[in-house]
Amino acid sequence: MQNPVIAKDADNTVNTASVRLPRHLRLRRKRDYARVFAEPFRSSDRTVTVLAIANGRDIPRLGLAISKRWLSRAVARNRIKRLIRESFRAHQDRLRGWDVVVISRSGITDVGAGMPSVDFFRALERHWDKIRSRRTRQRPCDAS
Image 1 (tube, rainbow, N blue to C red):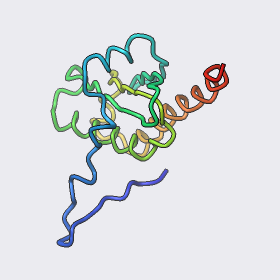
Image 2 (cartoon, rainbow, N blue to C red; image 1 turned 120 degrees about the vertical axis):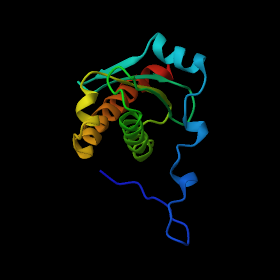
Image 3 (cartoon, rainbow, N blue to C red; image 1 turned 60 degrees about the vertical axis):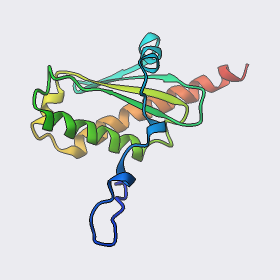
């Protein structure tokens, strides 16, 4: 798995604008989330459920639903969101044309409590691959 490159300014500080997930790659409106929740492709493990639906665009978009129920501390929730966004950014070429929502599950507490990031990245990568394989199988149907 590739690690994303983090841009640094001349004074060696991180340029946060360059590591942010751009607005056009985020699900922002209630109707966007509702569309994904309506009839999604699902992929789950003990940490997250990933919902995805074709968006008819050439870009992927990400939405997050990380609950306080499983991670009561904001620091832990923000870490999880950061890890998911980083993985999404690194694999966005695989997810072109999909709106994706990642929902936390009870096992997410393991990640918040110090599960190695590499294991969580691998789990997310499996979800991205399932979405990608779904797109490949659907492509012939889309042409007709």
